[in-house]
Image (cartoon, protein in one colour):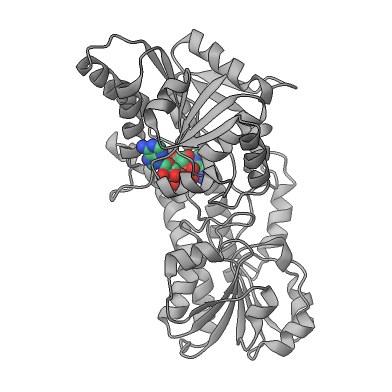
Length: 439
Ligand code: NAD
């Protein structure tokens, strides 16, 4: 099948590559000329495990191409995916300007039937806006062309994106046209072989499903963080509580890890956007509001613990910081808790020696030569001459450090762990003070 993907970011690039991997002829189009030039040379602008090899293979076999030429992309085939960003606007609502620009581009260039498939996370009612923009442009061109707009939200997780796309839990197809649903089912058939995972529904429900999924996951995290804070007041251990409740099959173990808050490009913006959608309908989304507030507070918890330990005097202190990405296996630092912690430490007069296996380039892009922030090429390197260690991302390579060596290296012999990576007794046996979350 001939497929066009607008947007070559985390979602667009993974979608295009996986669709090419199963034999389709895919064109990825982006307005970022530098990004496309890199991709044409096989240089992948993001870190996502396994992606680089898969892009290169499909590119060399001619199934995956990159362009900035909108006309050629629209001419390419029936399926036109929208996978561009929907960042938060000033008021928290999703900014639809990129999505609608793609709709406009398709309508300006199409000469026959097209299916426009929205993979970006967009508020309920966006498909209607896409339709309206396209109808208006086609009318101005004097063209009476048929098209369909489908909502096909994406549920991949950064860090495991290829697996999530190739073996999805579900494929949601929101459409009001049964014929289009069949077209999409055929497109997704290679990813839907063992059991039928396609869930078809009306467009508005599909649009809401994506927000509902992310809001539910964010709620689980904020709930656990709320309880973690309470556990600290009560002298309980949240990790024991997590074990205790996860064993209930109605609750389950996934996504109930306490920590220093959720980040990334999706949860913070999607919870906000859903809250905003509710507000526009005159409905006050009490729970969503609390989920967001708890998370914002949680992102400051680690710094508060550090500040309290040092009795408010952080001037001249040197902190090793392990982890910059918002979670392991990605280089994404959008809304990452690390940013709150490192900015607060530097703001309080301390210096930060950071290590992250993948996100250092992104940190350099974000912070430039910010005074007080330096980077190291290993976790151990970041500990040199440091007073204390702060952990914000649970990368695998941080799981089993040499605590005895660490105890000798860290001048103040203290670890602040925002991800509850270690057994407190083990750390303390090495003569280190250990602050975690909720225990
Ligand atoms: P991203 O910022 O990584 O990539 C977006 C890309 O779109 C950029 O390369 C940008 O240059 C390009 N773009 C903007 N306007 C364009 C246009 N008119 N034509 C062509 N390209 C254009 O974003 P992302 O993380 O891939 O997210 C894309 C969408 O998918 C968002 O709505 C997001 O909420 C949703 N989503 C993201 C994830 C995730 O884990 N990142 C998961 C599921 C859904």
